[in-house]
Amino acid sequence: MCVSSSVYRRILPKVYGSNFFKMTVNVNHQSQTVSDNCSVQHLLVNLDIATNGIAIAINNHIITKEQWDTTLICDQDNITIIKATQGG
Image (cartoon, rainbow, N blue to C red; front, side, top):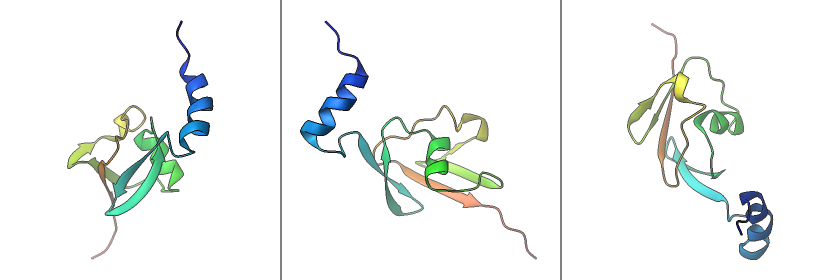
């Protein structure tokens, strides 16, 4: 008999603590805790980062904007977010 992941998500945090389904990533050299199965888009929403004029790389690999919804972040990933600026 299989137990659905939703059951695990309800039971395991009670057994192992609330951080059981969390992972740590580095965003611009700062440690951040995010939930597992976190996409790039979800990370940007959680960090309240506007999506206009930014570029993102994970472990030095550029992630196109079209891939943000489908690219999942892994534990200990190094994420670089660069904001375009205007100036002379």
